[in-house]
Length: 278
Ligand code: ATR
Image (cartoon, rainbow, N blue to C red):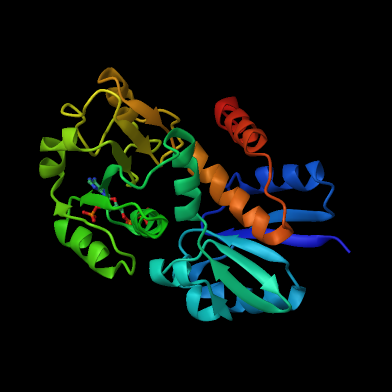
């Protein structure tokens, strides 16, 4: 019988996950389909019961359900528990097990540019949900120094205090981060500032970065944010959010099927969609 997978969220119409996963199912000749399901916040609980009843094999979770789904699951991976957010659920013999592949997906994507991360000095901009997944995953990977600059410094301090993995960190204002930007080898932008349609703004000035600094933005729409465009002018080595999106999907696919899929093909599928304008 054909297996069912899905992504749940609200809104969900523009999710590119079905495109990516359905292509992989056909590539690897797996008898399965992947759907998008809009689930409003007040319907989450009943939807989870329904999905279990239907025997769904696995699903992705996107906004606004990444944290609220946790009490509705049967088991939780320790990293997802620490982050406090789940983006991937696997049905293991009728039990829903929650994982977070966002942060690890980000790290895998970053390693395409910087294979050896451990001794790099990292500055993260932002202290929201995405920042938390990335910070915890980098810390778990063993990265020693990660400072966080955020508009609300207290939020950066709380994030640092919550991390169960050992890492050396300071919480900074955006201005402080900008002033000492030359001290970092990697700068990671994790906020939604600069995302389409508000593409003319940047959350951080890169005027003081060193040439060759890796500047990575988790936004992939647009593919080049204002931040990345400016960083290129200062001879940064830039990376957009496409690798993170693709790797988080690839890691979910691997958990569901045991197959680690073709990353370049996934990137191409998403790029084609993003640049087709439809
Ligand atoms: P997400 O889950 O997508 O990370 P979030 O938890 O709402 O979303 O976090 C958003 C992040 O973007 C935060 O770091 C937020 O800064 P504050 O903690 O000060 O709110 C940051 N952010 C959002 N809008 C911003 C803006 N206009 N300027 C600077 N930072 C902004």
